[in-house]
View (cartoon, rainbow, N blue to C red):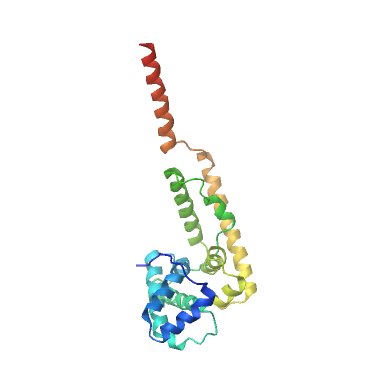
Length: 233
């Protein structure tokens, strides 16, 4: 089970290499530290590639096991996070290839959704109704992102969700920086188009009145009516 606990840590860029050295020296606790540092980012990468929570978790675990067993081969040519990201993608693509052989279908996806989208899901308050609305928006965005071709989906996640630079994303995916830029732009365009269509279909449901808001108004009216009845008697 993935652990999302966050702990106070030194800057990742400065400390990852020292953690890798500790792991290579046999310090297993250092590997746990490395996993906790990067669990969320790497899980998102796997989830964006595979479009399935359980499969993404399994692929992440496989990648971690591969990393631990081959940690002695890490030469520092790339950042530890980049190295781990490549292992995760390799684990994901291996699963996709197996599925392709079984089903003769190869999913095509790419990552990258945030910026403008963040504004849509920004919390106004912590009321249950707003929390439910944010969950619905998040679910909608995840569905739309899952529907993108794989190449676009992965780039979008790395650039917009994880806020990796163009250079970092290119290194992680082993593609030119120009390709990262074009895929990111295309992913955002496809998401905007898809969300716009969804909005067109739901316009008639704008300003729906229900839930706690409805209950509150009804309760206040009934309370006022009760007070008026008492005053008349």
